[in-house]
Length: 196
Image (cartoon, rainbow, N blue to C red; front, side, top):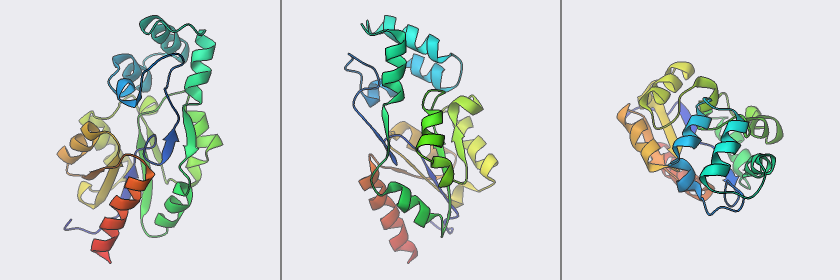
């Protein structure tokens, strides 16, 4: 990396926020299943409501629970920040700008911002359902760079989905794959070692 780092840009779920089990009740869908679901993407860009989301997933996956139970189960999929992650981000923000770029939705958003306190540790959270775009669309990364007024060369992006990392690299962002907080620590530690 030839230029100094100005901004660390983090994905949330599976990177600094821990996810618990399956996103849907009585279903074997995992994170990769969620990421590859066309209906999930529609929900995460704000094209459908939480009720439409629950109704369509109930039909598609033959889920026995009610739509209300599906929404409640999905609401609890994010557990909270990984142990130590909040403090790590607070510390990192004393040296760099720290922001988030997340594919999220209207069900998780209040938990992330109010309950988990993510607003307190990130300068800005760019959320897919609010901006109407989602990773790995190139437009999402261009929007983030513009919104944060930062050059791609001075940005480090960390995500747990390889296609998101590859897409960010296409716009010139220094991008790294990290599945879980321990891998985040490794990536940042390695980069910090280069800048020591």
